[in-house]
Length: 102
Image (cartoon, rainbow, N blue to C red; front, top):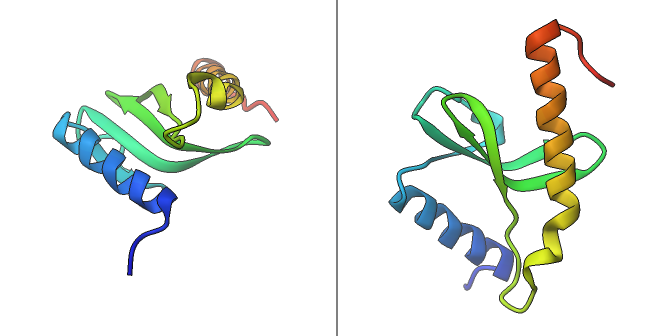
């Protein structure tokens, strides 16, 4: 039985990340210090759904990968980019002040 297109894309992205030196983890079993670069699959974004992959370098959020079909353009995941920037800024404020934004 063949995989759904979304699963096929995730399998290929996982492979490419691993070849590039990233440690790929499920959101249910995260260890940000398992490697210098950790990619977390299907990371929840408060009020914005999920990022397909949230990238961490040295334990800090550094980027996001949005998996898209072959026919979708680069702007297809733009809304998630703003959500990830918001989440990253909130996490940075929490580290600095100990206060969480709701």
